Image 1 (cartoon, helix red, strand yellow):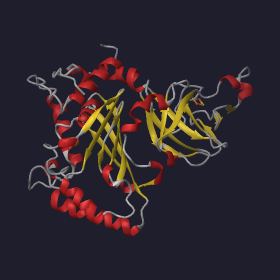
Image 2: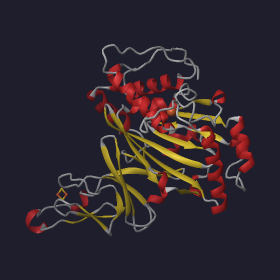
Image 3: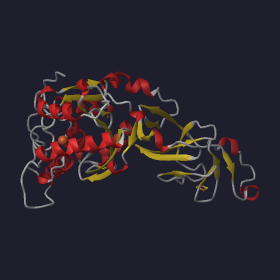
Image 4: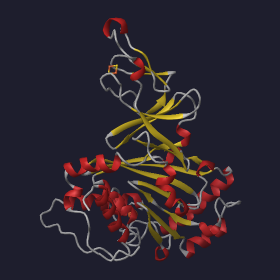
Length: 382
Ligand code: FES
Ligand SMILES: [Fe+2]
């Protein structure tokens, strides 16, 4: 990545304005593949998940034929949202407002008091509007456009740069599911994710198990890829205590932390795979949901993995600063708390009349500038 222009690309209002936010929803989040869940969220007919994809609420449901279909979550009568969150339907989808009922293939099947109220109704023209659905690398994805290009076209260029795990062979670690509401624009959260410059500073205590001097990162199309090996002393620790058989080859141990456009981070290391899903809520507010999967190793191997991590972490993982305040994120020893703190502080500073963006690091922040260029291009502002 050789982007020598070391000034930020996006204007301040890109991080603060409602109008800019609304345009991003329309031009970026409504025109790209959106993460909708893990493949195991839908395993039987009638099960569904719903997700916001920019301006569109979309649900995926499995039909009686076990095929996945995606529909816009909008009743064809007066537009009420049909399904909420995640769950298992019965055989049909019934709108809560006036009980119009659709089958799992999206066809309108019944309308209460139809003869009296809608004598000329053509039910065949009132099926649910379709969206696109795909399963890719153990995840479910939707695209608002029924005729979207295949997801493999969208992610094809970055696929060989992603981490080494076979995601379908891992099992979800439910306690690893987290949800954060962060008082920062989604781009600040994403920029923090792809900023290699902060790793050895903000996370000097918490991410010392990686060798930040050997980062390999860049963009494949709009998607950011990132890999760094283990630090030599942690690698020795892993070698001593690694469960057998190894989950991934030793030479691939380290952090694989790509950020797929727009806002779907993945994080793999030798033990685990996680998704880090950023959803914009407002110009100054974002939600991040993480879900984690682990190798389905035997209990003994899993225990030894945990002990190994614990031993290393108890020696090495400290907060950036010591503090008597138990709630101080900078003393928490949790890199996520450190990141959230930094993101929220940046967002607050944007309001100060004295805020002025300083120069951007030639290498360590090249990804941040590239991401800003991509956002600008998608917004049609180039
Ligand atoms: S809005 Fe759905 S049945 Fe009326
Ligand atoms: Fe970070």
